[in-house]
Length: 135
Image (tube, rainbow, N blue to C red):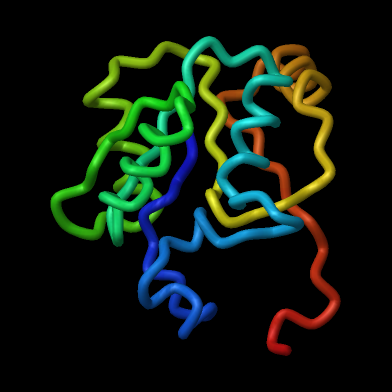
């Protein structure tokens, strides 16, 4: 599941007319990097929770023949609400990978899934240290 519904306020004015997950990074929309990770992890289906400018993500998915199922928020639900809505509306069964639609990272998805399964935890979170989050 890719969370792609935020306003991207920290990226204004770039996100006034384009969803942050469709902003280009190295000539590709950010959401494509998340989809690559999901495929590499062995995901059977890819869902995108959309909100702000969701019609643009729908149009992008349809025009590029990307196999992604859209879950559209009627009102902003924040990250936790978007995940809850997606889980309720799709009846997904674990394990479920959730990605922010505006992040590019170096991640070994199969290793992440294997680690999660080995530790038998309910939730596994990947985080990165940020030296100075205020700047």
